[in-house]
Image 1: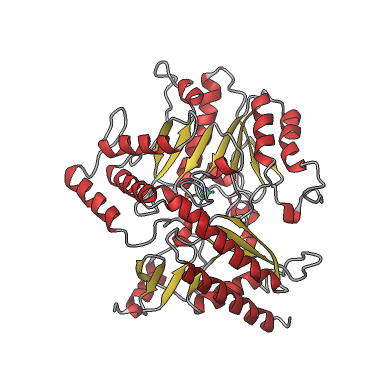
Image 2: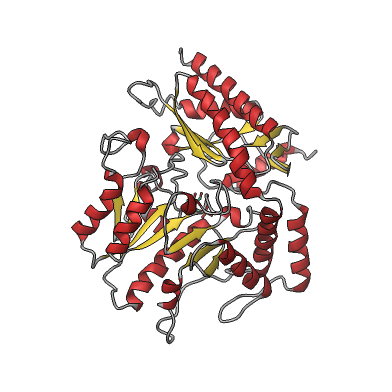
Length: 450
Ligand SMILES: Cc1ncc(COP(=O)(O)O)c(C=O)c1O
């Protein structure tokens, strides 16, 4: 076992990790992993109930992926794809296109989710310029959205704590209310409402003018904002409005892409019809950094012509041969082992198990699809009042669960945590997650005097 003292000193002294307050941090250092279990340097085992960061969908320790990376490294470890190709990036693009429905035939490779969103927004802006409608630069996004941390993604950020400190952000971003039925921004009740959340798109386009609005960007299912599946009417209504007003729809599938919601892509299940699709995470299960943007024929065709029409964006490592080889091997595992179907089946089992937590007085809502769920904590179930940040009930539950060997991640502005394990999770491991959360919630309730 590694000596963790000097490692912890080096961590605190030198590593500056993302989204982390270093003052007072008590480091946990992960050392190895297998399947759905990750082990720290002290030898403690944790069920990885968040799949790293909703990423390692095929599970940890997949030799097929290591072998594919090694074999590619022997042949061609490094080569760019600026006006040129390399074998794995071509094969990967074709494989992704094979799984994307309709005429989403064109795949731009990136190195992650934020870069994919950045690329999709730039693609949309240049698309409108190439079509002689450069004024259509405005981008609609939603409350509670999370699209990454680049300046574009931050400008489309719907969680205040992730955007306010970076102002001024980019101009031309229009915020819409979220399709969040548990806390409807229009104080409506789903089933009796007029789908104000979807109608907001039409209203904002009318307000700013269809000649100025070019893009609607939305996670097919809001993830970091609290795991919020939209009502079934939402995306069909939004897409209809966008088509009528000549607005491109960009679905962010960085979490839902490649099976997590129980279909290959979330938009297939939620009735959306995007022009552009952003992907990452499940594309390589995180074995190497990888992302992509899928584009429909009509988008791609707008970039054909001379040098002025070409998409003038990209980065050194886009289409990297090793990352592409990892992505291909990962997708082959998902196909061979029918992991999307498995995600759907095991996902129903997980959703049923987690729904039992609603019996707790501080659990306000449990929601999700496939193998992704969000649990929202409230101080009062009747009023849905949140706990004050200083109480941090969701964080307390997370910490209790971690002590008991289950890793879940806080999100939704600190009032929720998510459960999103690898697709190879067993039903016994799901039972353990539910049992540990049940005990952890009961412990926190006791501490808080419920
Ligand atoms: C929906 C969504 N889009 C984009 C991103 C950003 O991805 P990355 O962290 O790879 O930049 C994330 C990350 O969690 C995400 O959930």
